[in-house]
Length: 207
Length: 382
Image 1 (cartoon, rainbow over the protein chains, first blue to last red):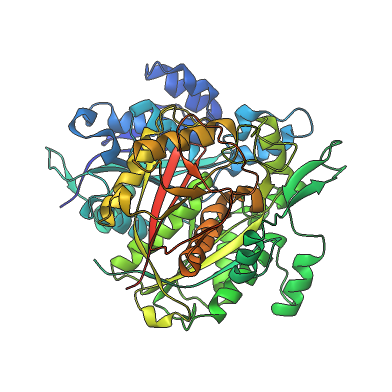
Image 2 (image 1 turned 45 degrees about the vertical axis):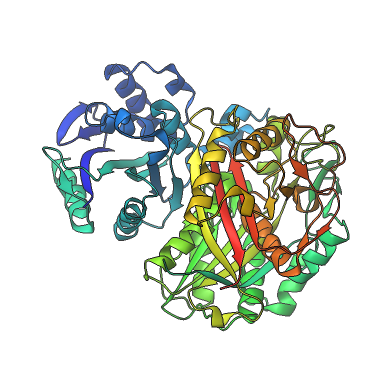
């Protein structure tokens, strides 16, 4: 049976990881909030500054998710999957790139006009080489992602999965990432539609 | 494991409106790539495979009608899905059928008007519109995973049918050539100023292309009107190395290939031909050659169809898979247009000319930005 062994939610300028508020900065602009969070959480990965905001958001959530509850040595690199979804694809950066086209288009910006780049950034940071897929939904489809992640584990396409929602467009953003493993640890939550919905709701109430 | 069959397919490209015509064009060595002059994009002419100005709207008016305000991108999808449905008894109106759209940029050209709140820009919008047009009662799925989108969508469909959640899947992959995408690849200096040359020693970059392909998958082979082909297995992987450059070793693509073959209960020696990604950039083709060599596939005939279609991004995996499935049916490995002299460091067997021989098993691969790789195996028979 698959378990949620870690989770992180970022929205309304509050980062909550496994129930604990790890950083908040009410009222700050999104870009400032993300950058300040990176600095204050003492992450030490200068490539962060080159990322677009979708990647920064997903990267921060993955840092909080994996930093003390995940031992990547337990798995072969190719056994850890990353399956993420959102509503706005890379539109936040598409708009910036479109505006830059009249001057000199930047390859460093263009590469982020694909939503799966955030998965690539997380994979590079944590050396994960397994299954990847980025889905785009009208809204967060919890039942679909739940079933798909469980199937990846059941069919042995992956031994651990990082799943969730990472969306940003202008000043609206939200990240909710979780780690699903087959092993049970203290604090494990069974991974199913109900627990994901509950967790999503609990976090809502807390923020 | 439940067997999953491809029961119908279609390709809409500048080379033809159906699989057969595209296959015939490729066998004749024809290409959709030609020089375009777009003063509104750039001063210099560029090479790309694009529909003639009025070709899409005219075809659409004849085949579908023009009473709904479809975008150019959506017209490609509707035309292709309509044609694929015509050759199968699977219906999108059936609650047992799911619709999957594979695309990188969808209606990105709408951004040129300057309104980022235009709802058609969301990738779910064309998917929902197309699903509603065909009266599909389910929520459509959109995969946007760079140039691996097509292969990932086929795998997703296979997996959804295996669980029994759906019995049929209509998978369409589409992207159009836009100033947005063209300027981005140009900024990367990834574009060739002449027709591209996959795996060739003189290759200097890719050509962009546009089109749509549709594949209808089902657990019921009786829905097929031509010889059914199965999706045997597949896998995806990530290089975890660089967001815009491929792996230096090809180990991660090779690993995806090995997993795809394992899942299919096959070994490298069973593969009759490979449909490679073969974009004709220096780094992609070199990485792929290393991956095929590592996977023990160095002696297997392979082709790249980028010289015919250009790189169609989110459509590429589907267009090239559909033509590879037709290759299995016709026992013909298609030639690699633009290839003359091997220009990669590993001895892979690129087909410059068509190869006629009995074919059972095809391996299709793809790789893209974000370090992603995909491999899927198709096989003839029940």
